[in-house]
Length: 116
Image (cartoon, rainbow, N blue to C red; front, top):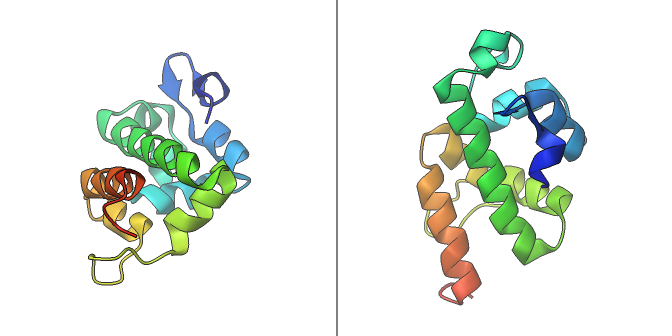
């Protein structure tokens, strides 16, 4: 995802991310594990926790896009594909549990050929 397309006034914006992913702001909130309110109120959007979660989503999708060739396909993978070694959980489920770094490590390992 191009940062200039999803950043406004130095912040990642849920509306712009949703637009790029052809989904809703509520779905973005669900995908990163924050409440709907965190995507509506400007002070909540600007909070460190909301920005961290949005940044994790963007980082994961950018890494996955390199494997899949499309942000939309990467987002579909993020939401629905069970990951090997994680008990059948998807990347989205892991991120919602606060395990985004493990998802990024997994993608890096797949990219390096560790998992076939």
